[in-house]
Length: 345
Image (cartoon, rainbow, N blue to C red; front, top):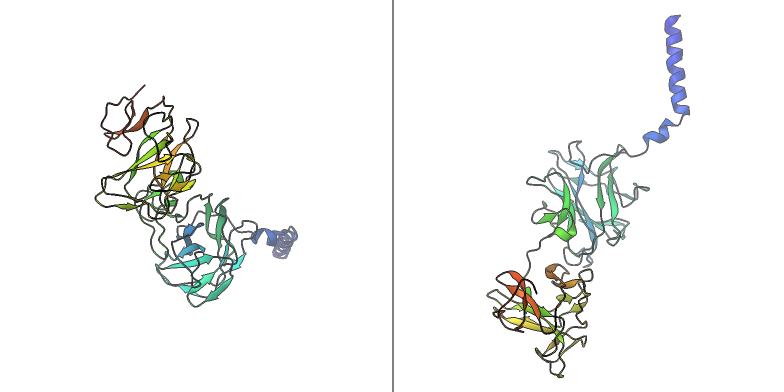
């Protein structure tokens, strides 16, 4: 009789739990880590939300992409997995019925094209670079196999991915050079602003904001100027690179095609607002002591060099001398900064 009463009690308890809606609770994805693969799941290892030149799809278009990785020693199926850019809809795109081999990577284009043809796979959504989004990979058991929160991205052709080597292995960071279909390597940082790029070795060398008598342009105007220096042994083509007087808006003025700075040479850009190239380069902005600074960027909008704005007296420039920014009472436009200089005015 006691055994019958015990069985009856257990059955009543189970029925009570079901009536409380526990089925609904178990359907929600459980929050895990970004995904180390320790659970035997496929993980997200790299996301590019502003792909301009990294990798093209079969249509020749540069779509954003999500890279998946199988960190286990076994072949794993993708059937039952879902990709999404929304916490509220983790089953946004069902993965194709294919496998990822052990230690292999797979690129999924976040193109919105929603198709799988041959070796190319396209999710039904794209990624917002301006705002950033959570990228989730839902496992067949209803848990998050991997979840990566992508912040806003103002640079093209950088990635946010898993650090796979060194002291920071297992954490996520921004990478200067994406590696679709391969291990993440190279320069990385916690924020985009901290990224260091292996780009051309030119620099901002001198500028003036109150040019009254130092040098005049072909129109006879005493426009302010910015001087660029190339310390390298080869000429650098500046075509498509950018110059700006706003550190928050680095693409304000684009160097015209054919702009070249010779090896060991100096190039003068008049900050006149005239925006022309008639044997002299004229930017479409003028310098002011209220500007945030001057920034030089490459044709992928990556910072090459920058300097914070300072207040300058008439006909005094601010420039580099032995690697230190100093004040020059006798400016040297388009020449080496070899006149007397002072760290303070």
